[in-house]
Image 1 (cartoon, one colour):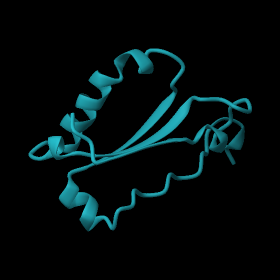
Image 2 (cartoon, rainbow, N blue to C red; image 1 turned 60 degrees about the vertical axis):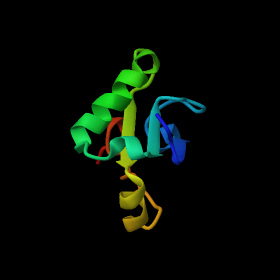
Image 3 (spheres, one colour; image 1 turned 30 degrees about the vertical axis):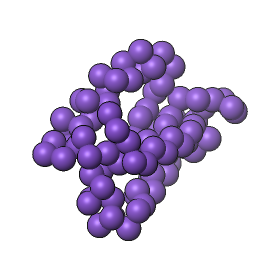
Image 4 (cartoon, rainbow, N blue to C red; image 1 turned 180 degrees about the vertical axis):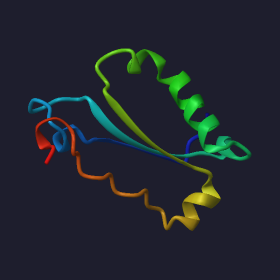
Length: 91
């Protein structure tokens, strides 16, 4: 898959996990491959590619997938992740 932008951010520190964990990730991916695909198909495509990695210790994967045109319209920025409200951080 030809990729124009790939950003992987470890957001585990934002969650109730031990220090230095690698369990929660945000992935921003821009590719012409996504043209004509809906959001669900895009995510299924990525899940298939990452199936081995996802079978391990990854607990959460936030995917932000764009065509180059959508990325331009988004101002070259993916949305910020919300604060974690699970585990010991629940109010």
